[in-house]
Length: 337
Length: 281
Image (cartoon, rainbow over the protein chains, first blue to last red):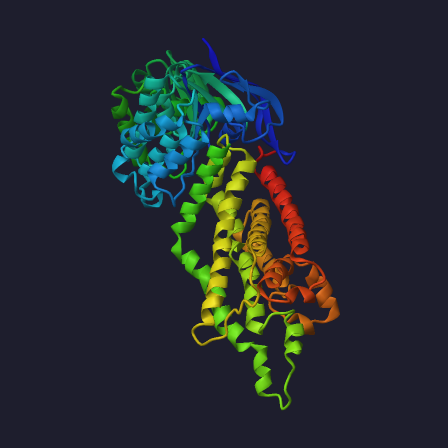
């Protein structure tokens, strides 16, 4: 496999004290969709900023498309596409003018500009609004315009920094559909940061989980979930008692038991079949149950496993999340792994 | 590089053209000055109150060869609008940073010098246009029963070139200065506080408004080096017959001094733009 992005011992410290990224190393293969996962402030945007030659690192080295990021930043800027988490399109220009400007800045041959702009406008479904000022666009249209601007020069590597932040579920699904189509057509490498676990699960072939500037796990979504060792049964009791943990561990079929955030996390290959025995074990230990829940392995569980903390998506309701999962799954026509 | 410069300049010009409110606002100030201030302060009217005739040479000394205060003032206003019309050029840099468009541009392969250059070209167009509009309006006012600009010299081709050069260089100088400030600040409030602190002192230490003949010596010394003074000296020497006798140097020398100012501001702005657009540390 040819590496598209190679990062070695990368660190970034702000003001000499705040370690945003701490000695991380990873590689992304050519044509791969690689997800960089973590909560707000984990170091995702800092890593993207360094890899796109906008931020100087404190230590380490990195190559993108075989070019040293720190030795040749201008060449890096020519080769990559970048979609920021915030809107960067010029509100006072039309969608078409924004794309024409980007085409000129990224050196798209003059003879190709018109055809490429028209094609992208159509593909992103903003052709009808092409000659309207960008300030009149909806959130979804602006995101699609951002994506079009990011790929106008057919980059070999596309960086997406939390590109669906603030989009509604339908908008997110549409956005990822375009990205997948582009990957299929151009074979471009996609490096995406997100804190939406379900999106990462659906879109990325491999993931890295970053927390407090450290890489805590890398692998494909299914590899990471396999490392959990099966289903997770979460048991909450009236009080925490060492006898409960011992009783749960003694239940045949239980792979492991741990106490996290006042709840016992029981790993077992067939969790649903084990629930009666687990309930009975607690009762026999003399502790009253307050709740029992079963979770199939998901990236939420992976995150909890590797960071010891529950993953919380800021401002996303359970309903929104459930709808989004459905929308994303629908967009790709496959079930969750 | 030229293609990137052209595309970014076009973008800046489109944005100016699409904000007509800003254009109207920038026109309002010079019109008010010409129609109200310039008319009210026409010191030649003092002859109406004086019981003795005032020799014309007194006024010529007062206005350094200009036939009237308004004519003297009109040349000063032409220089001053080059300053007021460039005020927003730097603010746009800050707003672009806040709204993310500067981030997009600096993530492209366009060099910081090109990004700055496009802003400078577009940012100088408006003050240059406005300065010539002030000259035209000043001439027009004389034909509608008000005090107007009275060009008493026959302006040579070289003189016309010097006038255009003075307006262009002055506009470029102040556009550079305000862009430099825009690149080094992050908050619009701070920007406006600073430009206000620059704007008025620059005007009030120049020879744009004051009749030169009655200026205190110390203010004359300060005003002599003021870039607005240097520019309006070039205009006044060329527009008024015999005015050169009231200036210690020729218009070319003042133009050279103005060029020095502009070069210094240009270099400062390029350095600050490069620092602001370089990968952050």
